[in-house]
Length: 115
Image (cartoon, rainbow, N blue to C red; front, side, top):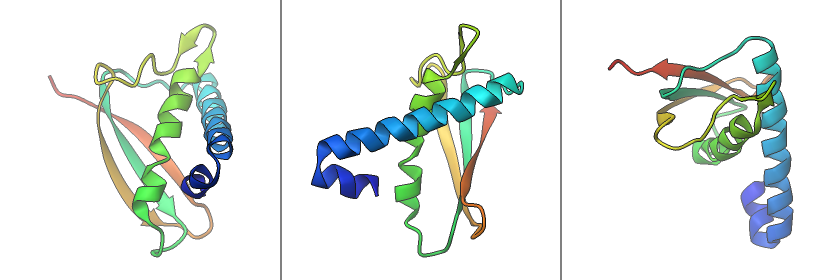
Protein backbone atom coordinates (compact mmCIF):
# COMPACT_ATOMS: atom_id res chain seq x y z
CA UNK A 1 0.00 0.00 0.00
CA UNK A 2 2.82 2.40 0.86
CA UNK A 3 4.55 2.01 -2.50
CA UNK A 4 1.28 2.58 -4.36
CA UNK A 5 0.54 5.66 -2.25
CA UNK A 6 4.06 7.02 -2.81
CA UNK A 7 3.66 6.62 -6.56
CA UNK A 8 0.29 8.38 -6.55
CA UNK A 9 1.16 11.25 -4.27
CA UNK A 10 4.33 11.73 -2.26
CA UNK A 11 2.42 13.52 0.51
CA UNK A 12 0.16 10.52 1.04
CA UNK A 13 3.22 8.25 1.14
CA UNK A 14 4.91 10.58 3.60
CA UNK A 15 1.84 10.57 5.84
CA UNK A 16 1.72 6.76 5.79
CA UNK A 17 5.43 6.55 6.67
CA UNK A 18 4.93 8.95 9.57
CA UNK A 19 1.94 6.98 10.87
CA UNK A 20 3.81 3.66 10.62
CA UNK A 21 6.91 5.11 12.31
CA UNK A 22 4.82 6.62 15.12
CA UNK A 23 3.03 3.30 15.66
CA UNK A 24 6.38 1.48 15.87
CA UNK A 25 7.63 4.12 18.29
CA UNK A 26 4.66 3.52 20.62
CA UNK A 27 5.09 -0.27 20.49
CA UNK A 28 8.81 0.00 21.27
CA UNK A 29 8.19 2.49 24.10
CA UNK A 30 5.71 0.07 25.67
CA UNK A 31 8.27 -2.72 25.30
CA UNK A 32 10.82 -0.49 27.07
CA UNK A 33 8.38 0.11 29.92
CA UNK A 34 7.94 -3.68 30.09
CA UNK A 35 11.72 -4.08 30.46
CA UNK A 36 12.81 -4.94 26.92
CA UNK A 37 16.37 -3.82 26.16
CA UNK A 38 18.75 -4.65 23.32
CA UNK A 39 22.50 -4.61 23.83
CA UNK A 40 24.08 -2.68 20.98
CA UNK A 41 25.86 -3.36 18.66
CA UNK A 42 23.98 -6.42 17.47
CA UNK A 43 22.33 -8.05 14.51
CA UNK A 44 18.55 -8.01 14.34
CA UNK A 45 16.58 -11.16 13.66
CA UNK A 46 13.20 -10.31 12.15
CA UNK A 47 10.69 -13.12 11.93
CA UNK A 48 7.82 -12.01 9.69
CA UNK A 49 4.48 -13.80 10.02
CA UNK A 50 2.53 -13.10 6.82
CA UNK A 51 -1.10 -13.96 6.03
CA UNK A 52 -0.43 -16.29 3.07
CA UNK A 53 2.14 -17.56 0.57
CA UNK A 54 1.03 -15.05 -2.07
CA UNK A 55 2.59 -12.34 0.05
CA UNK A 56 5.52 -10.54 -1.56
CA UNK A 57 8.21 -10.88 1.10
CA UNK A 58 10.21 -7.82 0.07
CA UNK A 59 7.14 -5.60 0.52
CA UNK A 60 6.87 -6.78 4.11
CA UNK A 61 10.60 -6.51 4.71
CA UNK A 62 10.45 -2.91 3.47
CA UNK A 63 8.67 -2.06 6.73
CA UNK A 64 12.01 -2.56 8.46
CA UNK A 65 12.70 1.12 7.69
CA UNK A 66 9.66 2.23 9.69
CA UNK A 67 10.54 -0.13 12.54
CA UNK A 68 14.11 1.17 12.83
CA UNK A 69 12.92 4.78 12.67
CA UNK A 70 10.41 3.99 15.42
CA UNK A 71 13.14 2.36 17.52
CA UNK A 72 15.20 5.55 17.21
CA UNK A 73 12.26 7.77 18.18
CA UNK A 74 11.29 5.56 21.13
CA UNK A 75 12.39 7.24 24.32
CA UNK A 76 11.56 6.44 27.94
CA UNK A 77 12.89 8.61 30.78
CA UNK A 78 15.38 10.28 28.45
CA UNK A 79 16.83 6.97 27.22
CA UNK A 80 16.51 6.08 23.53
CA UNK A 81 15.93 2.44 22.62
CA UNK A 82 18.22 2.71 19.58
CA UNK A 83 20.58 5.71 19.48
CA UNK A 84 21.19 5.39 15.73
CA UNK A 85 20.58 2.77 13.04
CA UNK A 86 24.11 3.04 11.64
CA UNK A 87 26.49 0.08 11.47
CA UNK A 88 27.83 1.18 14.86
CA UNK A 89 24.62 -0.19 16.37
CA UNK A 90 22.84 -2.43 13.84
CA UNK A 91 25.43 -4.67 12.22
CA UNK A 92 23.09 -6.71 10.03
CA UNK A 93 19.81 -8.54 9.68
CA UNK A 94 18.53 -12.06 9.55
CA UNK A 95 15.00 -12.36 8.20
CA UNK A 96 12.64 -15.29 7.88
CA UNK A 97 9.02 -15.60 6.79
CA UNK A 98 6.28 -17.83 8.15
CA UNK A 99 2.52 -18.03 7.62
CA UNK A 100 0.01 -16.93 10.26
CA UNK A 101 -3.38 -16.13 8.74
CA UNK A 102 -4.87 -15.08 12.05
CA UNK A 103 -2.14 -12.76 13.34
CA UNK A 104 0.29 -11.27 10.79
CA UNK A 105 3.16 -9.58 12.65
CA UNK A 106 6.89 -9.24 13.04
CA UNK A 107 8.92 -10.48 16.00
CA UNK A 108 12.33 -8.91 16.53
CA UNK A 109 15.22 -10.34 18.51
CA UNK A 110 18.71 -9.00 19.13
CA UNK A 111 21.51 -11.37 18.15
CA UNK A 112 24.68 -10.47 20.03
CA UNK A 113 27.92 -10.57 18.13
CA UNK A 114 30.69 -12.84 19.35
CA UNK A 115 33.81 -10.69 19.48
